[in-house]
Length: 280
Image (cartoon, rainbow, N blue to C red; front, top):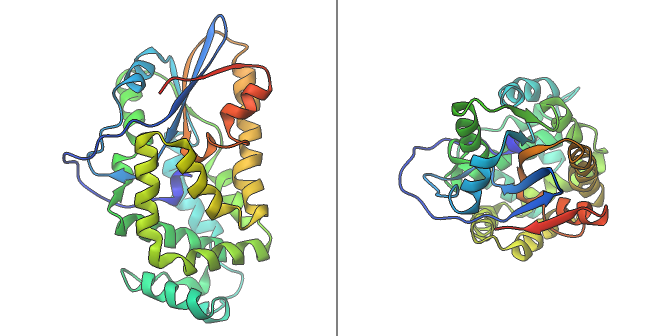
């Protein structure tokens, strides 16, 4: 989710990455599906090879959030994040989780968690981990693609709105929200190392490693996996199936976790009888 990672950085020479990409095609329609990282180390080189060809060939870009929706995400977060009444973080987390939360919080500004819903605290923790790992959305795939397509005067659209995306968390039942927050806090000591491993796997196009890391994280809360991964993939695969009914070439760029595993977009589209080929 693009809004979940927000840090800052400057462009300078960085690592080389060759992320996984698939092609869904028929006689007159091609949809390239590129797995993205919303924030990356400064200067990461990810946009040559087959990806460069897809960018050039595509008539349009489809992201999780359009540029306008991404710009609105901060305002929507501020609307949805507050609790009806404050609740101290000590009443939500204990033991290892509370220790981990405190350690992460002290690496920067106070989160102000007492006045926020559990899911919103988790979002802020994710942003802090991204900052500590020196990841930058300015160097993320979506930012780079948006710049390229805007410069070429090609249309850019989104699969969902910022409100829809954040409501996925807002509408999770309280037990699922608390479980996600607790896990994030308990694992916060290793979070930077885990994000670095995830980024490295993405850069190698190692879908098995990506699936393992993502599944270990979200499978602990099945309700969250259903809402955040599986159900969204079903909606997006339905969109892609409909889009195959019109001619043209599309670059569809979504978080890499949506393209791996048995409930990933390539697997879902293959199950619908479409021709899906991994091209990078």
